[in-house]
Image 1 (cartoon, each protein chain N blue to C red):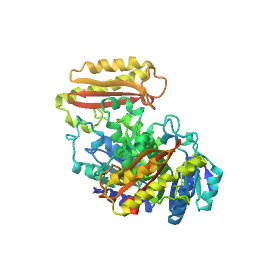
Image 2: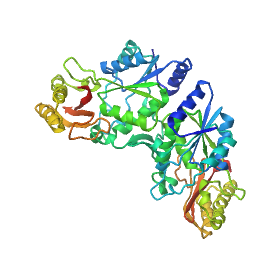
Image 3: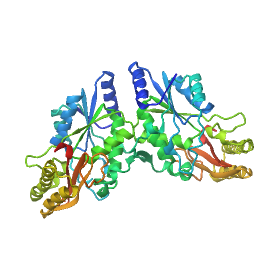
Length: 282
Length: 282
């Protein structure tokens, strides 16, 4: 396992592997890896001969008031985790390697990016689509792995790959949770002990929503209403959104009459956390 | 030489070639091929084992008041020309094959697209970047060939390839002209006999500009002023722009103190024609 910092080094290594007929999986991450990322690396290691993990806190997907500067980093721990899970190469570029002087191109989309996180993070998905396009072009993987925790991100990337005819198989992997239910996230590290307890309200709301859908509830407002009531009872929590949307288009639906995504974003103190479930998975 | 209409067929053919270790060149066109296109196919045939010509009038790069519906088409003649110049495959999809229901992604850039043709054709370069990205992802060529007549298009695509790390070598080919100087264009077919004569004012202005630069003129306004005066003397001509810009950024420069592009767009009757020269080529 080695770590490289330049696009040229990644390209050289991947071309060498491809010349040997080996398949390549890509796990794009912003680093500070946890068991959620580990499950993606495991999946890639299972499906492909070689696995590349990109470790890059992408400035372009952060808004001006967001947590770019405080986003946690620990390259040494990341490298150990990647190696332990069978990763073969870490690509950890500096921002200048990815965005040279005069950089001005972007990849974006309408519709799917205009709901949920797109509303509170207006530049976010342009940054995600652009950096993922770049990583796809740099690594040219056979398969790429994304967590279902960022459900809208996965839907957006799927749509981009389909619209722009990118020749890559996307694999979405299940949410990995702490023992008490909290979805694993690099941002959990921001939480004080008191906030960490309060943050449980997200997974509790998700489990409550799943229970209602499992019981046959078809009324979106009934499901989101029960979830909101549960979250609002927590004094440290402030709801960004609790929504039921069409799983393909990310547009809100009044009735659960098709594959749907129930997604939530909640501030715990200053930390914005997300969680979700797909109605097909309950 | 064969013509295919689906993305799947192109992919299958190109993968077969690549499995044999053959290199592939792509010549993206909107069809109604002329000697300018032929020179691109010749160049690709010279550099690569196999050449794919895409023949697609891309709706996304036309504005609502532009000539999408009247754009000339002649697939049979195109196929003969491609075959005669050593092309191996024509990809001629229907619009629905390229833009399925729910298509909503796009590739675009700032700065370079905001000058010259970008001013009078505001959606044009988004359409160009998006369709070229799609074609690159579908064909995955080693090299792609574009004419220098669309100088801004070539600069924009070069910038996109560089920014988004597309692993493709771009080749820009010289403008091909009629015997009397008019730059070859599929749109020349719109001209009445009288307009055809009037259209000569474009190449005359270009040659006059080249002469001035060759003579050592460094003042942009002196060059463009002389060119404008020449065009304005033609009653059927109406100037869209006559500009001297930085060849890399497409931003106007008062003094020719770096590699520059002199580009013009002129309406002859209702037909908008373009022409240009690079100061490095005079």
